[in-house]
Image (cartoon, rainbow, N blue to C red; front, side, top):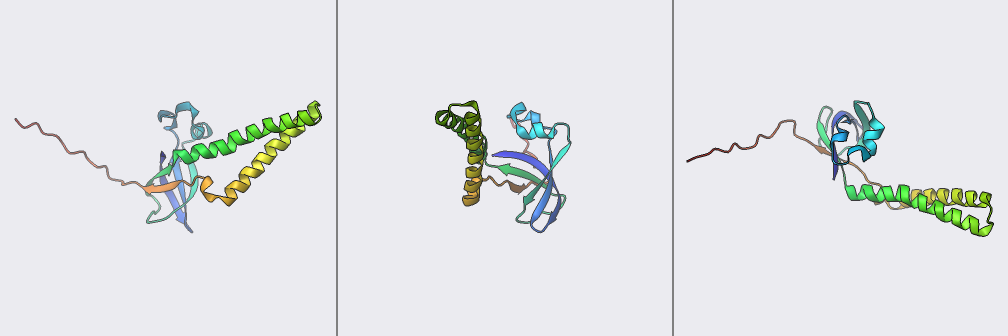
Length: 151
């Protein structure tokens, strides 16, 4: 699970506006390869609008959790599939005519076709688009039991 802490700013009509702290993004295991940290670059917080269920109210500390496997699959569908389709379209365009124009048009057609297929697939199979979950976090810290050395 990929998790980030946030504070609920408001809750209206089943949607929560959550301020997610992005200042510490470079300290997690993803480091500089994380897209959220790059998009935030210098902003103290990012506001997200997420569906809310349960007993979450304004001012609550929450964890925004997203399954890593779903995020990986979405990245493949959104990045690799269009890239491969563009290459395939360029190859097909070069086979049909052999000119640079046909190759470029084939690449554009392959890219746009892949975007359309991905959009339709996400619409037909809602589980393909990862949905973040809001998990309430207790505001009180849980102290660890002290260990006593008894002789």
